[in-house]
Length: 71
Image (cartoon, rainbow, N blue to C red; front, side, top):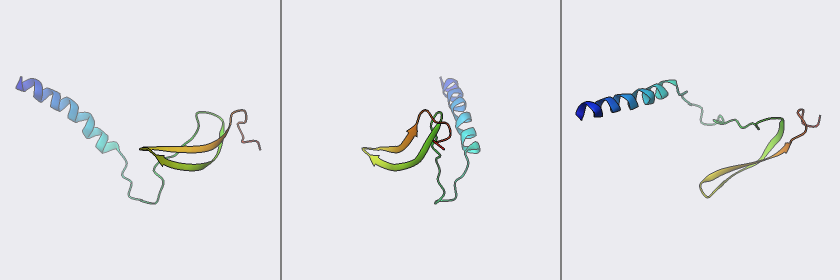
């Protein structure tokens, strides 16, 4: 039983240690940490980022039929 607990601990610790090693460190507090893009085509600039009931909501204008933004 102790051996099984040890094996499970090792197996779960290896991916967590690797994730810590590969995660970039963000030391620039004023630099955006996220970049949002639609799945396809073009979107206008975001019109608002709202935090409501524990979730962030991003609103933007999206043109489904234009790949160049109507230019």
